[in-house]
Image (cartoon, chains in turn orange, red):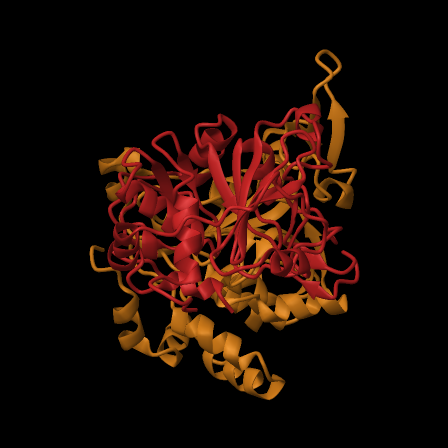
Length: 293
Length: 263
């Protein structure tokens, strides 16, 4: 019944060639400790499903783990484009299946609910539909004649998300209740891995069951990773590290400087704790901790 | 960034956009959206106290004391009355047209207000791989009041033909949106040179006003398609008031994050 494994063992559950959906949104709450470990374990030929993402996808592309990305948007937002992702798509070493956010959500919901398609008006009149006419089909309602897009199921092998707390049974709590689009990938996935800021006693869930986000039968494997979303945020505990995003982008301008940065500040450190230490340790964490948290 | 006189172009753009909004505006924002975020906050702090703005599409009625370097981060959520659970609440509010206002920009914009944020060049062999349309293809179909903005009005952005249509504006023009069963459409496009609206029947972009000091020749040279001109002389964009400028500078965006949108 105990689902707790180490972050290394959790990452080892991902086989090469796997379709892996990564949680979080933009600068927020991606399972970065897990993603770092995937890069360290040299995974290959992954298909990433990441609805709106940046750093997690860029790390895995930089590490050569990825052959395909299914996404609505990949960037560092106000801090620019994701450099390795951009280069890999421009040179053709990674294939990008671009969808819009809601078309992806609809495809994940079709997978989650075992129906042939979910209809939506999203995407009508855009070139996005033409990229994949088999999975986002333009159709007309036989009764009203109204146009809609039929979004077919998007199967996901493994979903990995980061949350605030869990008991060892796999009951998971996200605080306050900002689960981004993580529910969509968790519901669609055959296997769900959750990394959490802390493991708490089961009694804590029984005392306040209304705060539980996912029940234990939804969660297959758990790993404890304090500051496990760093350098993305984990609201309301800590914000994203804009210094890291800036330094990463700066280093990526030259292969030599990036190789050093990558080794020293990303994949080199042996443990997640060492990784935090390599990025400024307590001083950095104090700067990122939100005051009200 | 300074123009001659008491305000700069970013301030003129924010104030012009803010004046479009009223108490019925129910808005949210996406990535790198400093100009509309400033405009929503400015409108709420001046003439539209009932305006709703969901910061990052999540933090409803947020009232941040300043803006951060990302418009999709917790830096701008302080003071919110609700942090909405995005997949359920957000898409329900958007598809239900409770959210009625959205502003987007693009690496390319065409005469009908369609936008590209996907690729420059062919999709399979892109010259530049852009961030991606994100929610553009969704929200362009769902939200009735669409506003466009661009801080760099030039022929590379305002193009005859998009390399990729990531989000729909007025589609192919005319009644295209109506035929697709989509509500409303783009109302206005505010740039660093001028304000444009759309011709009521063809839905082609039409010059509405020139910013002070900008000539018609400058705007037509900076636009890669033939811009519809208004009947009669072209008006000059109304200037910001002193109180609007004070509130924008001191209360809305005291650290001037909006300048991040200017190269």
